[in-house]
Image 1 (tube, rainbow, N blue to C red):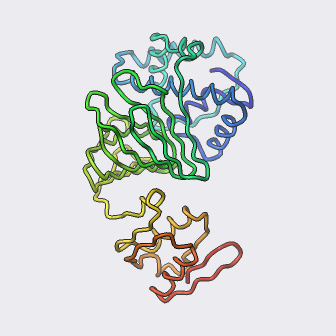
Image 2: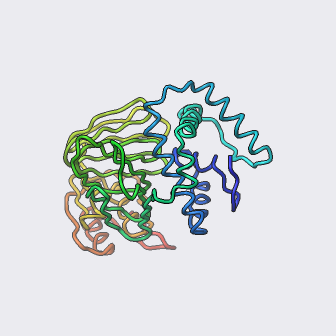
Image 3: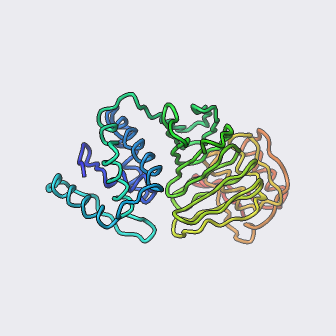
Length: 327
């Protein structure tokens, strides 16, 4: 594997792309990307190859064991002195499949594209501390929540429209039955042809909530199909997506600027308020956590929302040492 500046290498990038990095490793990769334009360009081209590899993986007939041996031999010969990232094997990661995919890429000549073809550009959008709206090459629109990112080719090609995302975003996808729209969110794939839905990708799980149309959510060989007002949760340590009805509208807060509570548990509203306002609200009395609230907050400040909560449930709100205690 190639070793490059700031002690970054391809092993860690692969681990990052399949969603198996720790929080510390995520920080390391993101800092490396931001360190220079050359690092950013390298990552963008690497990500393009990764997306192509996922497209090829379903079509490949390569012998994975043989591919792994060839891949390992090639890596060892070229990098006898390279420092490799320590990785703990996990049952959920098909590492030999990844190696096989990379061998297919080499055979297909995508490494040439990666190193020399400057005409293929990857667009990377990061929202930082602001909610951003972005229009994709096919006219699809994504609204990114804070601290989220999306990447995609400057022009979609082939018979799929592939994007990669981290964080949270709401997608309104332009219908095109002949060219499915596929989102890679960690180790989860979301496939649609034209619909609207929300994706929330965090280190521990990925959630997909559908508003219109039909969405297929997959992890490895397991998948579920979602209709409007349904959601799927995919936990990092589980293979099968969990499907259920969605009765919560709080997920929409970052694009509607409203907190809609329909028999919403107080702990769930508190989680969203902490995220939206960068607050540190703590429910100090566990008996209050499941109290249900029915109201909609529009353009209220955090103090105004806390006042309504206090009056509604007859509880005390105390600000202390950077925390807001509900008791």
